[in-house]
Structures are given as C-alpha cells and as structure tokens.
Image: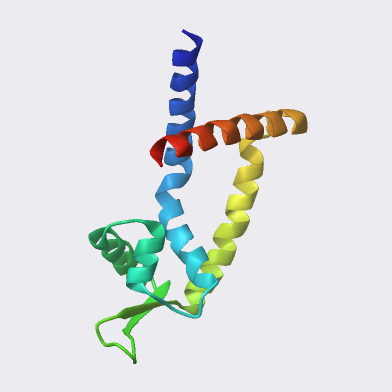
Length: 135
C-alpha cells in the first residue's frame, strides 16, 4: 500500500514540476546549450536533446521568429544547418537562468537542509536503480 502511495506522490510531484516548469524549460535548455557554443549543427542539438527532427524544427522555428536564435547553412557542408544565439537570445538565457534559480530555491522552502540531503540521496538511489533496469 505504501509503495502505491509513494508512486502516486511521485506522479503528482512530476506533474506539478512539468506543468510549472515544462512549458518554458524546452526553449530554456536549448538557450542554455547554445550559450556554451559559438554555433551548433541543428542535428547535433537534436541528438543531444534526444528529440525528433520535426519537434526540434518546430521549437527552433518559434525561437527564430522570437529573435532568440538564427539559423544558417554551414559553410563547409550546405546540407547542415547551424543554430546560433542572437543578442536577444543571450539576454533571454541570462534572464531565465536568474528566474529558474529563484524558483528552484522556492520549490524546496518547506524542507530543511537536512531533509533536502535525505531526499536527494533517496532520489539518487531510485534513479540509479531505474537506470540499471533500462540498460
């Protein structure tokens, strides 16, 4: 019984995190990755994020229309599209990073530092066990 309740609680936490952060997090991850690169092939970005080509194209199209990124053909290989942050994109990644850091702190305000350490250890143990199952 307790394990079913734990699973229910984890699902509710997952839903809460996804609904609170998931909507903006996809673009933020891309901005964060690109902020560490001077430019990146779209295919490499797609592979790194482990998403389908149609999905990455749709997200990048929206980001390009918002002025966050630019895309251009590679000089070495015209079949490859390079993705690069614009100045607007650089500002946005800094803004979102500050916002996420503040929100992340607030998520765990109800826990003491000791409880955070315990929770991190337990989640790490679960994550390791689940990753072993998939390999």
